[in-house]
Length: 319
Image (cartoon, rainbow, N blue to C red; front, top):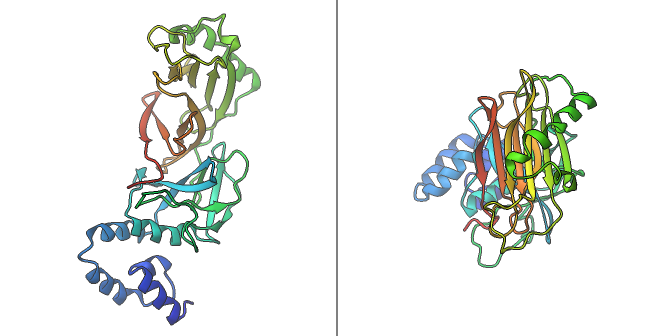
C-alpha cells in the first residue's frame, strides 16, 4: 500500500504517474485533475494515454563501449507491432514503470522465454545512466543480468508458438546441401567459391509451417575494398531462409551484399519472436556494423515467403 507521502511525491514528479503505479492512490479523481492540468501539453497527453494500459514492450539488447543496455523498441500484442516514440517526459515515466530496479523482464533465446530477471538500475535512478551530448530526448537503457546469447527481452511472456515437427540432422543437412546449386549461383557466388565462406546455421521453430524455419548466413572473410562496386561483383555475404514446401525445403528469403561502404551492410541474425499473438514468430535481423546498435529488420511470413514488416533505423538519441 502506497503511503500518502509517496503518492504526493509521485504526483509532483509526474502528474500521471499514479495511473502507472496503480495501487495505493485514489486514482479516479486525481486522473481527472491531472488531465485537466495537462490540457496544454498534448504530447504528454498522448504519451500518458499510451502508457496507462501498460502495454507489452519488446526490448533490444545493445552492446557498445558503454556496456550492455536493455532498450525499448516497440509495443506488441494483438493490436500489432508498433515502434515506440515519446517525449522526454514520456520516456522518464516509462523508465519508472518498466526499467527501475526490481522490474521483471523476460529474456528470449532461440525464440523461447528464459526465466525472468530483474532490472538492477533504470536510466534515471540517480544520475543518468547514459548521456549523449546535445541530445534532448534519449531512449532509456536499463541494467540487468543478461544471459549469454540473448538479444531481446519483454516485460511479460509471449503466448506459446504453434507446435512444429522437429528437424532431424539429416533433414537439416539435405536442406543446406541444396544452397550451393540452387541459390548461390543466382546470387553471383559459384559453387566452387562457397566453401571458403564462414557459415552460421540457425533452426527457428517459428510456427509458420509444419516444420522449423532454417536460417543460413554465409560470410567471406575477404575484406572488399570500397572502390569495388556491387554491380557484377561476387557477394561476400549471403543470407538464405528456408521453409518446408510440398517437395522439401525451399528458399523463402535471400539477401546478399559486398558489405563495403558502397553497398548495403551485412545482416546479423538475432532471433525469432511472435509480436502479434498469432502463434507464429517474426524473424529479426540486425547489422554487422558499428554505430547502429538498435538497427533492426523484422520479417513476417506471408504467402509462403518472408517479407519485410518494418525496420527500426533510429539511434538512442531521438531529438
